[in-house]
Amino acid sequence: MKKNCNHQADCLKLIQRIVDREASPEEEATFLANKEQCIPCQEGYELEQSLRNAIKSSCSSKCPEALFARIKSKLFVVLILISILIPLFC
Image 1 (cartoon, rainbow, N blue to C red):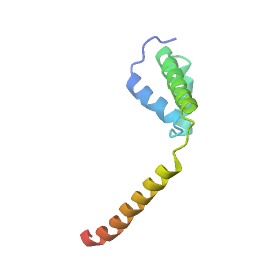
Image 2: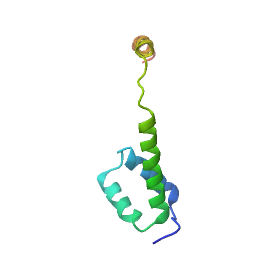
Image 3: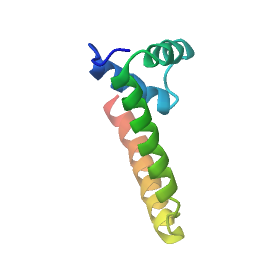
């Protein structure tokens, strides 16, 4: 079992991609096989999973409907402006 990871920064980025479900199946399989031999990778993976689970469990409230409507209307105005301005510059 390795106690040091020579490419820990790359592994941490990959861990985040795996947890976010952005990694390819091959990347995930390779990492999970390596994780069993590397203590820093195991700890990094467990920490990331724990953080994500804690955030999910504590963020259960919904956005107030009035706030959501205001944001939606402002985004609509921005989209209209973009659709008007793009032809002017292209």
